Length: 421
Image (cartoon, rainbow, N blue to C red; front, side, top):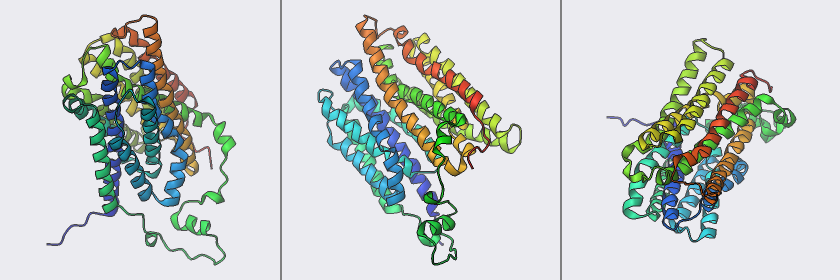
């Protein structure tokens, strides 16, 4: 019987899907493990916010270098080196909240390493791997912390990272040049022109990027503002929801069973639903592309805002899980609006617009995660009880108001018409 050979591109898609999965397992895992370790020695909330936000400082620093490295060295090598770097840091650096400088530097470099990963991946399916990874981390790591301690999470993450690196090294490859269509070119043609015509992509040096028009474009700013808000809400929940459960609900994550993974699993489901619904509305000509983007973005962000404002009012674990699941699920649905809009307005410069937008999203992690810690510490200094869910209203109301504001901005200023030729 002849052996069935799986096309190489399917292997790459699967491996990059697992790649983003493992990256978010690491992010969620650290927030879970550090919350427990910091709580054991009563680390104040401001310092906690500093440690949790250091990842995003490193992450934002390597976005542009990551794109350059992927183009210069190839995505295969960049992914491999990045994975090995953050895996070694997780495996070798002790998770000791008393050693603040070491923790700050380690999280900074983990962020730098992971910042090189996503610019090297350009397939849409891989993004849903992020949310599935977060769900897996939330499901398994609390029990691991309970039985083997916070450090065990870092060791498991390191093993996962190294294992993926070995598999990637074995099965991945750069696209061979022989796969590119051969084009007869004059001998005087430059290398950039040959590459442009052979790949169907205009070479960077032959196109003048309209930076001024991009910077002052209201539709671009609508994308940027919504990307910031999306990641502000996501990163605050990802990094501070474990603390909310521990303090306000007096419930450890390991005692919650499988329900604790639902918020991120919901993101995985709804991010794919959003794409399917958008395709249906557009291909069946039920709505124009512009109206489709605005509809899904508005529904996603407004419903998410309502759920965020309701979350601290319930004060029970089950309703907190439901509220956070609805919030993150509809937030992911909204990605069918703003997150793909750069391809509508600037197909030729989509990478530039996406880079600016993603930088804003990373800055949201720095601002949101750090600000949340300072808000909680200020509340504590004002003799407010952090074990009372009412004290946490500000934490959840800030991203909720941002969601409403961003949805209005997108509703007014966004378009799916091509504005950059």
